[in-house]
Image (tube, rainbow, N blue to C red):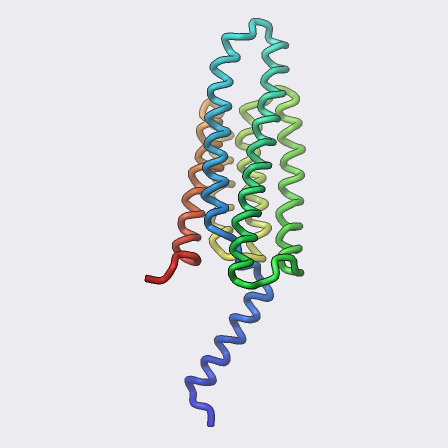
Length: 208
Protein backbone atom coordinates (compact mmCIF):
# COMPACT_ATOMS: atom_id res chain seq x y z
CA UNK A 1 0.00 0.00 0.00
CA UNK A 2 1.28 3.47 -0.91
CA UNK A 3 2.09 5.83 1.90
CA UNK A 4 1.38 9.59 1.65
CA UNK A 5 5.10 10.15 1.16
CA UNK A 6 5.04 7.83 -1.85
CA UNK A 7 2.21 9.79 -3.44
CA UNK A 8 4.07 13.05 -2.82
CA UNK A 9 7.23 11.67 -4.38
CA UNK A 10 5.27 10.45 -7.40
CA UNK A 11 3.70 13.88 -7.90
CA UNK A 12 7.11 15.50 -7.55
CA UNK A 13 8.57 13.19 -10.18
CA UNK A 14 5.69 13.89 -12.55
CA UNK A 15 6.05 17.62 -12.07
CA UNK A 16 9.80 17.43 -12.70
CA UNK A 17 9.25 15.42 -15.87
CA UNK A 18 6.65 17.88 -17.15
CA UNK A 19 8.95 20.81 -16.40
CA UNK A 20 11.84 19.23 -18.26
CA UNK A 21 9.63 18.56 -21.27
CA UNK A 22 8.34 22.15 -21.32
CA UNK A 23 11.57 24.00 -20.54
CA UNK A 24 15.17 23.77 -21.65
CA UNK A 25 17.00 23.40 -18.34
CA UNK A 26 20.49 22.62 -19.58
CA UNK A 27 21.86 26.12 -20.12
CA UNK A 28 25.36 26.27 -18.67
CA UNK A 29 26.48 29.00 -16.32
CA UNK A 30 29.90 28.82 -17.93
CA UNK A 31 28.28 30.00 -21.16
CA UNK A 32 27.35 33.27 -19.49
CA UNK A 33 30.77 33.68 -17.92
CA UNK A 34 32.60 33.03 -21.20
CA UNK A 35 30.27 35.35 -23.15
CA UNK A 36 30.86 38.08 -20.59
CA UNK A 37 34.62 37.74 -20.75
CA UNK A 38 34.57 37.79 -24.56
CA UNK A 39 32.39 40.93 -24.49
CA UNK A 40 34.83 42.67 -22.15
CA UNK A 41 37.69 41.87 -24.53
CA UNK A 42 35.64 43.26 -27.42
CA UNK A 43 34.82 46.43 -25.46
CA UNK A 44 38.47 46.91 -24.57
CA UNK A 45 39.47 46.47 -28.19
CA UNK A 46 36.85 49.04 -29.25
CA UNK A 47 38.14 51.53 -26.67
CA UNK A 48 41.76 51.15 -27.79
CA UNK A 49 40.78 51.41 -31.45
CA UNK A 50 38.79 54.56 -30.78
CA UNK A 51 41.78 56.26 -29.13
CA UNK A 52 44.23 55.21 -31.83
CA UNK A 53 42.02 56.01 -34.80
CA UNK A 54 41.03 59.44 -33.48
CA UNK A 55 44.68 60.46 -33.94
CA UNK A 56 45.20 58.52 -37.16
CA UNK A 57 42.44 59.93 -39.33
CA UNK A 58 42.22 63.61 -40.13
CA UNK A 59 39.32 63.49 -42.57
CA UNK A 60 35.84 62.99 -41.15
CA UNK A 61 34.73 60.68 -43.94
CA UNK A 62 37.79 58.45 -43.59
CA UNK A 63 37.34 58.29 -39.82
CA UNK A 64 33.65 57.45 -40.17
CA UNK A 65 34.24 54.67 -42.69
CA UNK A 66 37.00 53.18 -40.56
CA UNK A 67 34.81 53.24 -37.45
CA UNK A 68 31.90 51.61 -39.26
CA UNK A 69 34.10 48.81 -40.57
CA UNK A 70 35.77 48.26 -37.22
CA UNK A 71 32.62 48.32 -35.05
CA UNK A 72 30.80 45.89 -37.32
CA UNK A 73 33.81 43.57 -37.28
CA UNK A 74 34.21 43.86 -33.52
CA UNK A 75 30.55 43.12 -32.79
CA UNK A 76 30.50 40.24 -35.26
CA UNK A 77 33.58 38.63 -33.70
CA UNK A 78 32.17 39.04 -30.18
CA UNK A 79 28.90 37.46 -31.32
CA UNK A 80 30.59 34.53 -33.08
CA UNK A 81 32.97 33.69 -30.23
CA UNK A 82 30.29 34.13 -27.56
CA UNK A 83 27.88 31.85 -29.44
CA UNK A 84 30.61 29.28 -29.99
CA UNK A 85 31.51 29.25 -26.29
CA UNK A 86 27.84 29.10 -25.29
CA UNK A 87 27.14 26.17 -27.59
CA UNK A 88 30.25 24.33 -26.40
CA UNK A 89 29.47 24.56 -22.68
CA UNK A 90 25.76 23.89 -23.13
CA UNK A 91 26.35 20.81 -25.29
CA UNK A 92 28.89 19.56 -22.78
CA UNK A 93 26.39 19.95 -19.94
CA UNK A 94 23.61 18.22 -21.90
CA UNK A 95 25.85 15.26 -22.71
CA UNK A 96 26.83 14.92 -19.09
CA UNK A 97 23.15 14.85 -18.17
CA UNK A 98 22.42 12.27 -20.85
CA UNK A 99 19.64 14.38 -22.36
CA UNK A 100 18.83 15.22 -25.98
CA UNK A 101 19.87 18.74 -26.95
CA UNK A 102 17.74 19.09 -30.07
CA UNK A 103 14.05 18.69 -29.27
CA UNK A 104 10.85 20.67 -29.54
CA UNK A 105 11.66 22.84 -26.53
CA UNK A 106 15.19 23.70 -27.64
CA UNK A 107 13.86 24.58 -31.11
CA UNK A 108 11.30 26.92 -29.58
CA UNK A 109 13.97 28.51 -27.41
CA UNK A 110 16.27 29.03 -30.38
CA UNK A 111 13.51 30.56 -32.49
CA UNK A 112 12.36 32.89 -29.69
CA UNK A 113 15.93 34.16 -29.31
CA UNK A 114 16.75 34.39 -33.02
CA UNK A 115 13.95 36.72 -34.13
CA UNK A 116 14.69 39.63 -31.74
CA UNK A 117 18.45 39.17 -32.09
CA UNK A 118 18.31 39.15 -35.90
CA UNK A 119 16.00 42.18 -36.01
CA UNK A 120 18.17 43.99 -33.48
CA UNK A 121 21.35 43.15 -35.35
CA UNK A 122 20.01 44.60 -38.60
CA UNK A 123 18.67 47.67 -36.81
CA UNK A 124 21.98 48.33 -35.05
CA UNK A 125 23.93 47.78 -38.25
CA UNK A 126 21.75 50.49 -39.80
CA UNK A 127 22.52 52.86 -36.92
CA UNK A 128 26.25 52.27 -37.36
CA UNK A 129 25.97 52.70 -41.13
CA UNK A 130 24.43 56.15 -40.59
CA UNK A 131 27.14 57.09 -38.12
CA UNK A 132 24.99 56.82 -34.98
CA UNK A 133 27.62 54.79 -33.16
CA UNK A 134 26.66 55.70 -29.63
CA UNK A 135 23.00 54.90 -30.19
CA UNK A 136 23.92 51.49 -31.56
CA UNK A 137 25.47 50.42 -28.26
CA UNK A 138 22.35 50.93 -26.09
CA UNK A 139 20.17 49.50 -28.87
CA UNK A 140 22.11 46.24 -28.79
CA UNK A 141 21.46 46.00 -25.03
CA UNK A 142 17.72 46.59 -25.47
CA UNK A 143 17.31 44.01 -28.24
CA UNK A 144 19.47 41.50 -26.38
CA UNK A 145 17.33 41.94 -23.29
CA UNK A 146 14.12 41.55 -25.29
CA UNK A 147 15.48 38.35 -26.82
CA UNK A 148 16.23 36.97 -23.36
CA UNK A 149 12.78 37.92 -22.12
CA UNK A 150 11.21 36.25 -25.13
CA UNK A 151 13.24 33.07 -24.62
CA UNK A 152 12.82 32.92 -20.84
CA UNK A 153 9.47 31.18 -21.31
CA UNK A 154 11.35 28.07 -22.37
CA UNK A 155 14.14 27.99 -19.81
CA UNK A 156 15.02 28.93 -16.23
CA UNK A 157 13.61 32.07 -14.59
CA UNK A 158 17.10 33.55 -14.13
CA UNK A 159 17.20 34.35 -17.86
CA UNK A 160 14.19 36.64 -17.40
CA UNK A 161 15.98 38.61 -14.68
CA UNK A 162 18.99 39.03 -16.93
CA UNK A 163 16.76 40.18 -19.78
CA UNK A 164 15.05 42.84 -17.66
CA UNK A 165 18.44 44.10 -16.45
CA UNK A 166 19.73 44.39 -20.02
CA UNK A 167 16.67 46.32 -21.22
CA UNK A 168 16.76 48.74 -18.27
CA UNK A 169 20.49 49.34 -18.73
CA UNK A 170 20.03 49.91 -22.46
CA UNK A 171 17.27 52.46 -21.90
CA UNK A 172 19.38 54.30 -19.35
CA UNK A 173 22.32 54.30 -21.76
CA UNK A 174 20.24 56.09 -24.40
CA UNK A 175 20.28 59.22 -22.22
CA UNK A 176 23.99 58.95 -21.36
CA UNK A 177 25.55 58.33 -24.75
CA UNK A 178 28.94 59.55 -23.55
CA UNK A 179 29.17 56.35 -21.51
CA UNK A 180 27.81 54.07 -24.25
CA UNK A 181 30.88 51.84 -24.43
CA UNK A 182 31.01 51.55 -20.63
CA UNK A 183 27.35 50.56 -20.35
CA UNK A 184 27.80 48.11 -23.22
CA UNK A 185 30.70 46.50 -21.35
CA UNK A 186 28.61 46.33 -18.17
CA UNK A 187 25.60 44.84 -19.97
CA UNK A 188 27.27 42.24 -22.14
CA UNK A 189 30.29 41.73 -19.91
CA UNK A 190 29.63 42.16 -16.21
CA UNK A 191 25.94 41.19 -16.16
CA UNK A 192 26.58 38.04 -18.19
CA UNK A 193 29.41 37.05 -15.87
CA UNK A 194 27.24 37.60 -12.78
CA UNK A 195 24.40 35.64 -14.39
CA UNK A 196 26.76 32.81 -15.30
CA UNK A 197 28.21 32.58 -11.79
CA UNK A 198 24.71 32.54 -10.25
CA UNK A 199 23.59 29.84 -12.69
CA UNK A 200 26.63 27.72 -11.92
CA UNK A 201 26.19 28.05 -8.17
CA UNK A 202 22.46 27.25 -8.31
CA UNK A 203 22.37 24.44 -10.84
CA UNK A 204 25.87 23.11 -11.55
CA UNK A 205 28.05 23.39 -8.48
CA UNK A 206 28.94 19.93 -7.17
CA UNK A 207 27.27 19.09 -3.89
CA UNK A 208 29.57 19.35 -0.89
